[in-house]
Length: 435
Image (cartoon, rainbow, N blue to C red; front, side, top):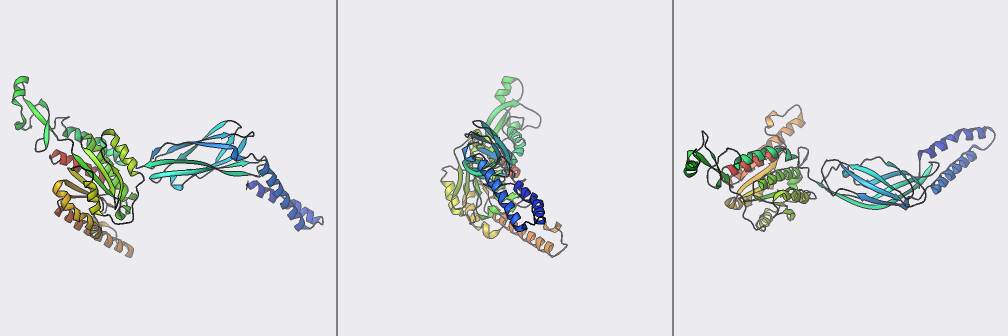
């Protein structure tokens, strides 16, 4: 049972009669108690007269997946199996991060008929979001009170990473097409293979002229080359405690996911095989042996429930997990932190062995501060903030130097710039024949 604001209004309306009765010689306290009892009886009778909300069947129509931050509509299909119309309010019990509206929804359910109620969501967290039940209030004829029931109606939606770095993909694919021989760009060097013939233009390397084709065509023909395909690219995303650090508007782990998705979409279009590992001390997500258009959906589905773990990553175990993939990678991309020497000690120890057999990139999302000298120093808090920034920059430079000495390459940038920088480096490696 529940009561509405009309009960308070009804109690307030009794003030005047009580005062008049007290003037007429009636005990004021007795009159007030009598009026309150009358209001309570009216509210109780109204609640008893309300239709039973338990006679309502609830079914859900929910998309299986949605992108983080994108609006999504879910539907509740309500069927009144009772013999009386139900007039009242409804609230769907989604968890707060689902972004469901806070206000209740007014409903009117005719007997024996279906009614569809749309509940809009705007998820604010990745992973599985659930709603276990629906609460329905059935109002009485007087609107003073009614019945309230919880109706079990489980539902779930998986919220995927938004892949906002997708906007960088068309320009990188155009460059990849040029690299692949779809335009007049010519590539030579170790690690490339013959693609096609085209007419010679001024500035081309004369060593690529095909003299037999030139004799047949009657004009100078040139061989074009493209990078070799079927290379294996292994992307490892660190899900340990450093991945929980806030960079920009999100966590470092989210920035790593964006970089991995952009690189994977680019590499699979280039004909390479992409393998994903999300690791701290155990494998949190793995995507392997998936190629073509099915790769990005498989990756975002695997990434969705993964959250940072408050423990140090075991890089020896991560290296063993890479070997367990059963492939020989041409490129290994480690998306982790490189701004704290103590935290980086583990992966720095594993880098030399990786760099001997593959090209290794270490990508890190930072807060974008590249020069602490430009920060304000107006008060003590600013001075401490500048000192902390200078210390962080110095530590990052030390780690980057250690990465270079281990035979790998360090790339650090803000969350928006890191994905395209890693994608550009991948294209440059393909162009130079190192992949």
